[in-house]
Length: 256
DNA sequence: ATGGTTGCTTAGCAA
Image (cartoon, rainbow, N blue to C red):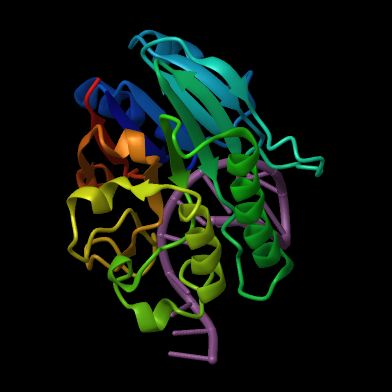
């Protein structure tokens, strides 16, 4: 199984690029974030033509997540079901084959100390609660998406400069680590230990050509799924050129 | 210290 995650920053603007990427990469599962469209507007037919089925939790203007798969998507869930009001479409889970796939778009947090940052930390804790409540670390489970957290200094081009920002703040890293501590492995780190592997580059200041990036998009897997993980990579090429998302896809491979 | 870019929506916000 080939599993990928990609923050596309508007499926409307990125549709042709995503279709072209699917045609070449042929993942079995693709998790999308920031689709920015309601479910009625999502271009189902274009993906169906490439052989993909779709599970959606969409929203106008902001957020929006989707899971594309070449086989059936079963037992679709769209919220934590923890009793809290949730206006944002940031969570989507579905079973593909034997694997439970969870697609998340973790809140960015905007500014450290803001209400949005508190919401980000709270959201990560709710995600941990969801795993405790509905899953076991022994499940075949992949938690994929844009976490808006770079876990370690080697995941940030300039850790000192980014330490006070929402993407690399100690509180965000702690919340992320508490999620990992439930029983998850970072698919990229199962296979690559070097720094300089980034999944997001700001549109501004020529950040991409300078490789001023951060690794904030992740495929996190339970131990049983980690045992089946034969490789992982970030497709930096997908960030190149005009009309690219500011994120690159993360791809992981598993034996069946 | 600030700005810079993109997308959605139309001047300002979110990222």
